[in-house]
Length: 221
Image 1 (cartoon, rainbow, N blue to C red):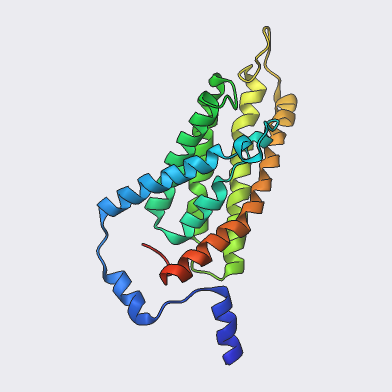
Image 2 (cartoon, one colour):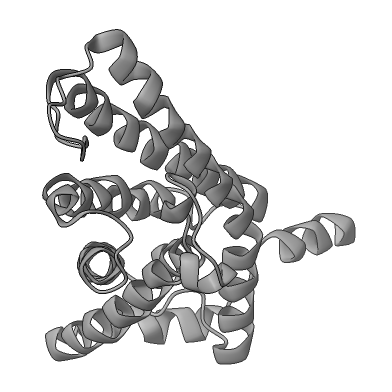
């Protein structure tokens, strides 16, 4: 019995029942939610900007799309409500990608037409996936984060494949033609390099555990 309790405590951070009950009885505060969304959107935006800036030199596409943001929004998905984590991820990703393109020149401005909505469609639902696992053991939570990262990569690929195939959208040289399905598939397959975002999962888990222990809460919602 003691071993079972020790095993459970290693996999999740549990609150005393009285504390949990008090937390659940508190009414939702929409003003607090809006403030949290504003603050965490800024955090995700900064994380999205920390790509080429993070490494100190320009990385080739699509490696330039690898950012520090996953460590933040994966942790937010565990610690905060779906509304706060979803909208923080969506708004912060859009703002960060906009700054990357128009301020730091990470891509030609015309690419913003697919890059900005694409990053929102890829990232925001990730937090909904992670939310399904946030009350599970840490190993299952880590699995949920891996699943969310795979989803993100697949969405990037599914967006870029038809764009590469049927338009000259990403071609900056004059006289470019559409690539066709085969060449478009090859070009879009570079999106799978973003699976390297999995390396941020241990960082996200550390942030989650640190916040839970520091504030003695399971979730902030």
